[in-house]
Length: 236
Image (tube, rainbow, N blue to C red):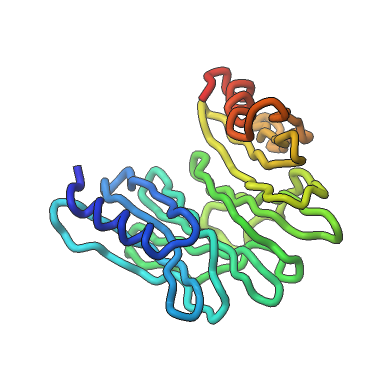
């Protein structure tokens, strides 16, 4: 569908990013969009690359220009074609930021911090649910790490963040937002044997208390597949 442009785009992203790129197809333009990390020679920046297809040149936008490392870029696109990018900045106090691209102008709005600027925050995940964008991330509070989420539609400020769960696990939490079968949920590695998860209850507009799925006999991926089956009734 996109031919050589796709090959070049993916090669471009994979050759410079320590973290895997985030890839989406814009439902309005049909363009392939990627958010990834670019090494400047001294630190990582976040960039957005768009392949319009049809042999048109790639459109590259640098989304961050901090002297600190910007890591873990993630992309989501609303049904009307508006692109959102989020990442975390590895500064003195790590924080999660986002930018959105206005459909009517094609320009990216200024960067906004979505996490508490006084609480070390990392590893955002982003998902589209109807007309809303959800961002989840991990925050360090004392000896524990918390999973937090916020929902917005472009207005600033966003509503307050919501605490989903917390853990003292010291390994990678790999927290993720998921959407499937009309459902929205968050999962994370809660211990070295189980995955934590919470579902958004649309009727009450609240998140369920954390539930847990063991992966002691298989893998995190397998546990997440079982969670999806429970949430959606469809399996992965």
